[in-house]
Length: 147
Image (cartoon, rainbow, N blue to C red; front, side, top):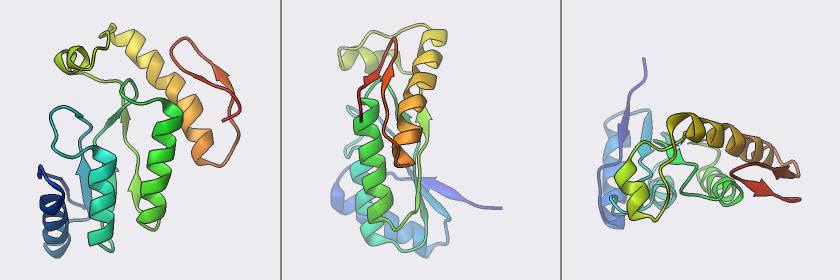
């Protein structure tokens, strides 16, 4: 059995201290939520800070919302954290479930099925990019041309 913990810190120094303590306590993974207007540190920034403070714990997004990120930029951020951490990133992706946060970000909150289709579409971009492939996708929600 493995145990993980969600990073509970609102400032860079707090993220570092939390990550170091979690690893010292024997947690197997650290997870950062993707709530840009709620969390004090963005999920990819928090994981980068944790990567520099830890050596073995897996680092994951809990979960990165495909509506908050262009899929190409999301793949780049994930690849950067994975590289900085020596291959420890677990990329969790989601469709978003917080209508208020969508409103705060000026985004329309689509019905669940539409959000699920957008997640599938984002995966058609993110997954091959992370595998080092060139991607061209013309979707309903997302687009990438020769990325």
